[in-house]
Image 1 (cartoon, rainbow, N blue to C red):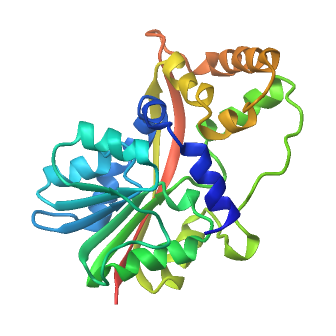
Image 2: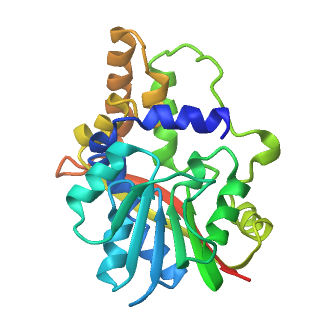
Amino acid sequence: MTDFDDHERGRWAGRAEAYARSFGRLCAYPAPALLDAAGVTDGARMLDVGTGPGTVAALATARGATVTAVDAEASMIVTARTARAAGHFARAALPLLPFPTGAFDVAVANFVINHVGDPLAAVSELRRVVRPGGQVAITIWPYPRPPLQRLWRQAYEAAGGPPRPALPQVDAERNFDRTPEGLTGLLRGAGLDPLRCETLSWVHRTDPQEWWAGPEAGIGELGLLLDGAPADLRRRARDAYDRLTAEYRGPDGLLGLPTGALVASGRTR
């Protein structure tokens, strides 16, 4: 475990409900493509790491897979168990998973590698728990950032927020480029034979108030930037958010925010 891992654990503690009604809906979009990339079909033994509210696990179960789902955050497991009847849910975290080598046919991680301090060790652990000839599939947010991901820092800067203290980051020697080439290289370095890396682009439709509920609850980049901030700065940030998102509001009042993700998969040897 690194300082970055410890920081991430603290940031997500007790925030499952707020995540599920805000960022959880965004992260659900690539789930079908993730399962396709992993080749999840009827009868597959699948491990879903970082299950969150259990969205990917539920989709895999509907395909006929036998699902084990884990998350580092206890409130996520409670939410997933409540919402999803099928599958086995437990607490566990990368890069150390409590499963035998080769226990699964498939392992998936939906926007999890963004939140670990040693990405190579994390993907290597996913490879370890999958049998030879099985598949590992992951999603990450790409770089350069799409408009949706740029919005939060733009709102903070427009509000006149001061520079924030340095926070734990992934060590440079352990990090990787959030590009198709960087992600494919990560899979290869973890001992996988890369099969594909696809860039998904879509427009995230959401209610403005529900989307603001994420940073209001301390989730995401803006939530982190506003943590412990004075009430006046939080108010200015909300005003800036409303101004910046005005161009993305449709006649129905919902936001349509352009975004994207990388979906990659590799086969175990």
